[in-house]
Image (cartoon, rainbow, N blue to C red; front, side):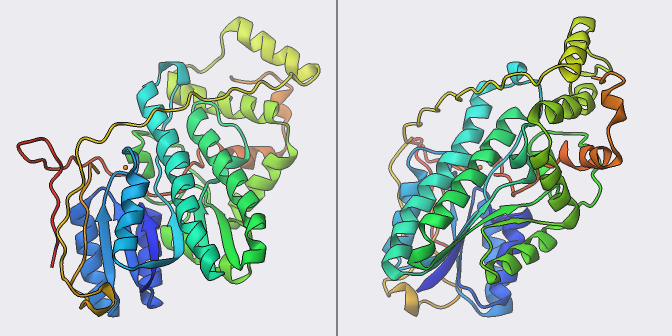
Amino acid sequence: MKVTLITGASSGIGEAFARKLAAKKHNLVLVARNEAKLAKLCDELMLEHEIMAHYVAIDLIDYQADIRLFKETENHGMEVECLINNAGFGSMGDFAMMDVERELEMIGLNIMALVALTHRYLQRMRAHKSGTIINVSSTASFQPIPYMATYAATKAFVTSFSEAIAEENREHGINVLNLCPGTTDTNFFAAAEIHSPVQIKGMQTADEVVEAALSALEKHQTTKVSGTVNWLVSKFGTFTPDWMVTRLIASQLREKVLGKKELPAETANSVSEKIDGDQPESVSQTPETPTGKEPSGSVKRKEAESAPVESQKPDKRSTVNQKDASTSDEDAKQTTTEKSDYLDTAIAAPEAESPVETNSEEKNDDGKPMTRAVG
């Protein structure tokens, strides 16, 4: 049975993808941590559109979660013809003061899980000489963003990675789309614990982002920036030196994050000297590689039916419930109106995907995750 697999499918952009594709008669495999939301969404889509909708409740940050998800679809004879890597989350703050474990988990979900799932399902797509992969990146991928350093860096990776493999697989009949939304009307900021996000001009809905993505697929585009304002922002960032962009963004976010309206005197002098003088040398750092977590126990599951998946009725779904995913000086003030508009949009344009939920999972007395099959 051919299916479309969507990660981060319980809310936001992931849920919008599920609803739109179900209306187009796609059979679905929905992946997220929140089992209750997934079950409810599957029931709704099956009844309304008469499709097959399965869900897998799993935390993609967990050790070997990608392997368990891949085996689940293989064991049910599902051919994933479309993979939508949408799961991810963000953070905001002074990096030196952030919880490093949380930052590493972000790298694990936004990058490692995406790469692992892409690699596993891409091989099957090549064997069939067809397939579609949508990797949800962000407009944050086009420039460094102070106080959202890790998040912007993970999305820069997604954009670079997606554009590269898109060209590698063009001759194999596989479409790879790098989708870059700007700030979207979802619960992204709440999940990232950003309690007072900057108000953005041209904020889109999740449905608008999905419509843009599907239109781009029809045109065989490699990268799609959703929304005209966001597209202009991405182009402006491309032609503006990163050192200038980071100074300007930091001047807007510093007060929000640190409660400081002005830079310390010596820092402000340094900024002034660098704006008036030559561009400083860029410094690159390699983030620490997160180590995998040992599994807390073996995966258990109960088959919903002994018959093949193709013969199951729409109310049969298989589940695996795992642990649910400067102020600047006078020269800087003379920026053009375009730069001002850019700031209004770019500094807080991290919205790209539905974040993982924070629900904890039930466990048996022996500490192993509980699993069940829902009929």
